[in-house]
Length: 154
Ligand code: HEM
Picture 1 (cartoon, rainbow, N blue to C red):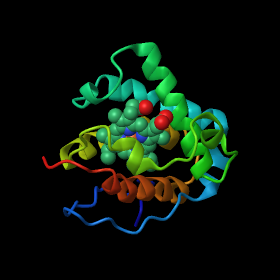
Picture 2 (picture 1 turned 120 degrees about the vertical axis):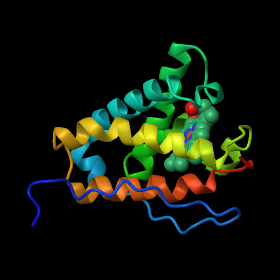
Picture 3 (picture 1 turned 30 degrees about the vertical axis):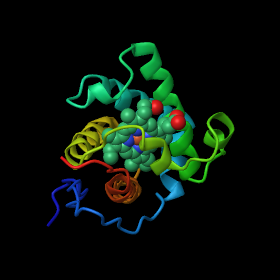
């Protein structure tokens, strides 16, 4: 029996070098649930978390630049959830692997990236801003697509 406990599964899929798993876009209902502002808040929290994380060296060192980077990321996530194409307008075609090629992204960095994202998702869970199904779909997207970004051995 489920005594009101969360059925969310935040386990992190093991990465195998050179393997890029199939990726399913998040359910657009996640964006509908939290709204564009909710997505911007989520990415704000995530980038504040990254700024204090063990992978902070990869990111801008200035808090204002970090805030701006978080908002470009929000543009992307709104777009990937079938919202307006803000990222195409602000930054151009996503081409995420190409954009990440300039950074040394190891499988270890991916773990910190995902754990930091999981922390940023917590208020959405506790305040029940989205359904568990839709949050799970968003997480599954991060979990799989983040493996595509790894470009450096640990
Ligand atoms: C695997 C771990 C990852 C690491 C360590 C990482 C790291 C970075 C870094 C260092 C940047 C440049 C600074 C910035 O603009 O924020 C960046 C940009 C970005 N990343 Fe990642 N990233 C990862 C995975 C992902 C994934 C899975 C996505 C999408 C689902 C993503 C989406 C973005 C976006 C949208 C930008 C902004 C690009 C731009 O504005 O031109 N990243 N990432």
